Length: 69
Image 1 (tube, rainbow, N blue to C red):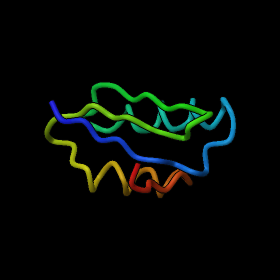
Image 2: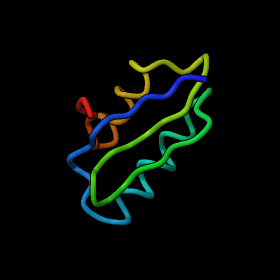
Image 3: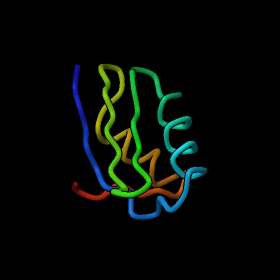
Image 4: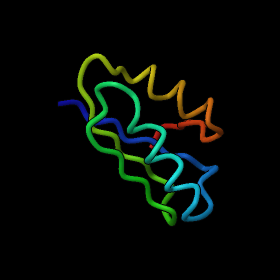
């Protein structure tokens, strides 16, 4: 199991948290997504076939681009 921790500065409310968690969880291989509204930190646990690049690309597509945590 791999863990990716990133910042998503665009997260500003509970709806944002829900969107990130729901959308990223739908990616094949993603096991768990935890987003925090206050810290804007997103932690993703995943395994193949998901990759860090795919996760970051998806986050950008849904309007929450990832930055280093």
